[in-house]
Image (cartoon, rainbow, N blue to C red):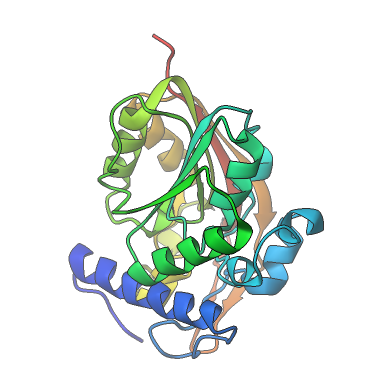
Length: 274
């Protein structure tokens, strides 16, 4: 098992993981199992993505956008996007949620995608070209330092990405900064319910478990507390799926101990209007 040695190294290893995912999606092949792009559950890929998104939604998008979907939910369906809104997707990957958001907000609105991986950005921009959607802009950057002005976004979405960050407090602070007063956070993410101390240290330190959205997941109340600390109001998590007791990858497995659940949830929070 590959172990991490610090935040910068972990970030680079996650970037390499998703770069390989992007190349695999662009060439319509599956990433090599025990490489830096190893399969880590939960990651939906094509089959699960088709379970998270309506078929009519997917039919409007290039296949490579669907193949690159690595999230744990469908934030665009739960964010209640309105025409004319400005949306920012954190960790936009192949662009599936950005493109769907752009359709929902219409030509008078705009959808930004932010990603740190050049290969994913190239894939997303190609998917945008194929889809013929103009009210989209993909930005290179990290979610801990969002390259947008203060009070510039109506809605922030994200699909199983915030858990990848090693500085989640900074992510929440940046999200609060770029949201307009009254703006909302509406993200899908992985969380633990129960005593996080029960999660083995070997899992918390494992690169594949981080990239697979497991090791970096916060405990539910810790997640909500950090949102409140950043200034958000009405923070809540709606569980959308509870995962089986054993999380399998082709390289390793992690048994969820008794007394703790690993779930995907839809996280809502609001920036105060005043």
